[in-house]
Length: 101
Image (cartoon, rainbow, N blue to C red; front, side, top):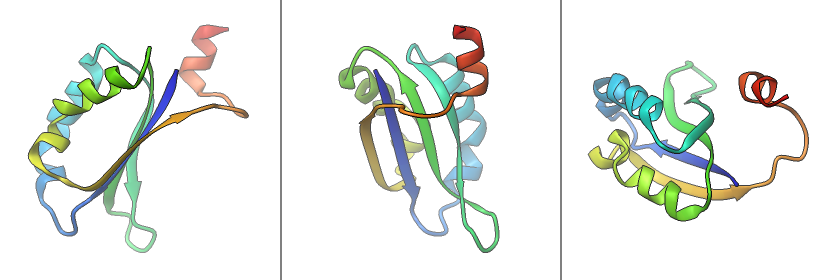
């Protein structure tokens, strides 16, 4: 099952810069398959304002467990965090889809 994790940072928080390397290591080591991830960017100045992560796992409990220990979430970076089950209807993820084919 695919899930989309959409987090918006608290305004002007220094936590993203402070924890970015730890966040990346955590996603790389996660037992949940990360299909795609990257920062959300402010349209005016390009600064990072949030996170979008798409994961493939057995169910919502796995996503919740992953996010319970995710460094940005633990530190309180997110002003809002939404997790939704997602059905990919169109398109392909470059690395994931090529490996599956």
